[in-house]
Length: 239
Image 1 (spheres, one colour):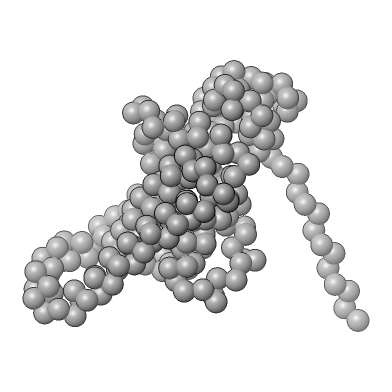
Image 2 (cartoon, one colour; image 1 turned 45 degrees about the vertical axis):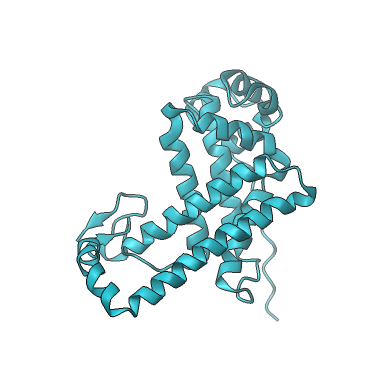
């Protein structure tokens, strides 16, 4: 009889994860600041030089790591979710909702992060993080688009996710019911837009009007497209 492989032991959290976890106690009071970073280093017991190498910009880098950790946790959970039984729109809704529920207990840390990334100097990083969340969700749903639709899907979902997050931060309703209703409406708007696009594809006049724009967009490819052999994460390209 073949012996079943033993369950792998849970790996130890990385030093960066330990720093982020230690920082979460201080973020509600000091934000993602240098004071929080120093406190996290002291509480985690990580060597200050190592901590500085992991987060050169201190609390700011910890804020980025905190957001990315949420995306990673969502990706890890997808395999255990029953998404196949849901309508496509409900799958998107579930993943957006799950992403927010993952940080429910750290809501103040999310609020502080939103404030930080709203500053003009940090807006680009903030937009990149939201885009990464949208990309994580679409990848989890098995998105195979490699043309300009790769960008439009993530741009639209980025808007849905960011607006829902802002609503959620101010939501005082029981069980965040108002937020989930808001999310349902936003997803409903997106699905209505998709239905309109589908109708236009069958409309002869619309096809003629869109021929030019579609020709211009057709060479656009997603980053790391399979045929390039380049790693994912690089900028997109025109073929």
